[in-house]
Image (cartoon, rainbow, N blue to C red; front, side, top):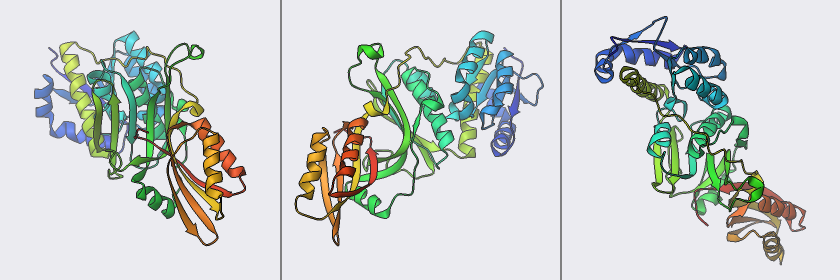
Length: 372
């Protein structure tokens, strides 16, 4: 049994300070939980805690892994961008890597995906994160998709759409349909039968952007300061993970990984590996089906509604709900569609824009988290 485990903390700032405070204040408890004392500040550590927040931390983390050390990181950009290098270093040199805190701060979702659901099959994963930090959100999306679908997904593989300021009119119209707007991360299996052109494999879609959720969906009513991940697996069904992502919550996740990693060092065990055996191809956005909310600015004359409906029918996009709002000589048509591929919806919007009765398609949002 180890007489002690030496710990070094990389990085500076509030997160590093909070991690150091917790280790110093709870040393007796941590020793009892681990089975050996944790000693801070060693030059030749057993465990390295990375509190940095950019991929520039690669060099010291790789050095630690190549020396056979255990790294615990909260760095989403590092894991998402350099995951393959890190995994290779772990396998080659016998170190270990823990990154629960790199996704959704204090929300425990990495361990369920890599352990609890390792014998199940994830069909869809939806997530909301505080703020509009697109780079960090895309990094977290890439990590989640990699874990969920056993396929290496890079941040550049994630389709990104800007989250602009929505109009009060659209928010009210969507609300009247029982829908709530969120900046949503979507990782999903594209469900149509895989063809020979894709090697007989199912495909995956990973995207981040504004999307509507039904009010009854567990992600819809959450406070904007809360991170949450909704997972739908074939066996386990729908699962929900939510919590804080502030410094205190993220430090808690780092300490949870620290205790696990330290126990492994004491017992001679190692963390489960993230598998990427499936190598599922990415589906083009045009092939990905979902429902849509559209706001059409149309002229108010007899037959306009029939013309609009004919355009939808001509492109195979079904209308689930439609509401007309009159504004002087013009009107707005609020349309909620049935599920349709993105390509069919895009062709529909192009045709509507060219129609004499449609002045503009002012809003186009996906509707996720709902069956047709």
